[in-house]
Each structure stands twice: as C-alpha cells, then as structure tokens.
Image (tube, rainbow, N blue to C red; front, side, top):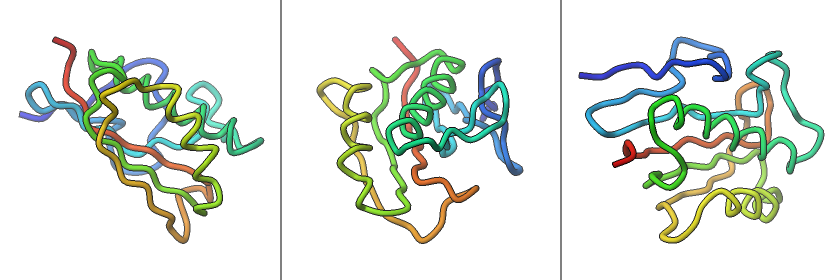
Length: 127
C-alpha cells in the first residue's frame, strides 16, 4: 500500500503529486527544485545556492519519511545545461558518502519554473 509523505518543511507541490511516496520500506521522492518551503520563493542566486536548496528539500522529504541521505540507493539529476554539472556534482557529493547511490544526470530543454536543477531519489527507510 502506498502512502504520501507529508510533514512540515516540505516544499509545496506545484501540481497533482506528493513530495514523496512510501511503499513498504521504499521511499520514492518527487523531483525537488530550489523552492523555499516557507516562502514558496525560488532560490536562484547561483547554481550553488540553487543546488544546495534542492538538496535541503530532498533531505526534508527523506527525514519526513524516516530516512536520510545514507539510505539513498538511486538519484536522478536533471539540469538545464551540462555546463552546470561540475558545480552541481560538487555540492551533491557533500551530501553522500561511499557507497554512493546509483545515478543518472541528464540535460533537458526546460525544467519546472525554469529552474536549472531538479533532483529526485529512491531510498529505503532507516534500519
């Protein structure tokens, strides 16, 4: 049975979706963008600021589901340009330790709200 992940500090959905869904001990997050969960404003001052906000939003969903970055098994990163890859990768790496999650990173034409980075993940609940 699937259950929506809810909690304080989660960025508001901009469409008909949940911030994340739990099924058994698996957690599937929706793509997170750089939206401040308290103001609804986008944090787009730089790719570094934007990526850090995305990672904090992703962490909030994981924590609300009883997990954290240590239990992430797969991530998907979407970029507006592969030119952002080195800086996004640097910030992303600060949040994980070996063994790193499986991952793909792709550049796409346009992301929601014209942001530069969106990240989703699959995790397991802490044991």
